[in-house]
Image (tube, rainbow, N blue to C red):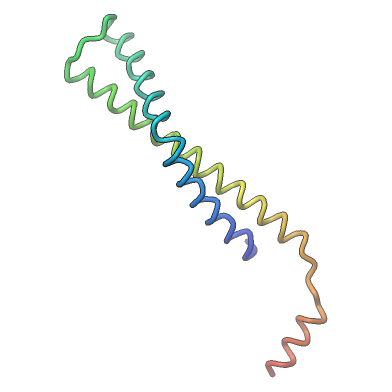
Length: 107
């Protein structure tokens, strides 16, 4: 992995974390909770009561929803940063004369 691709991967991960905190935390919790309510309704029947096991299933599904949203944001932005960095590294043309001169100047 080239230097620019590696840097932009880390920058993409940071941007993904910020976007997740701003845009993904609440919807992930809502969607996970809705999924949990559906699961509890299928297992225990409708209407859903407020028992301990039902609440634990809904809470676990909310956590799963938040984790999936975080993974999607962070991995997606990291991959986007890596792709941009790899493309920019491929577009850079190495200057062989400048590299050889820098090597001879340090000797």
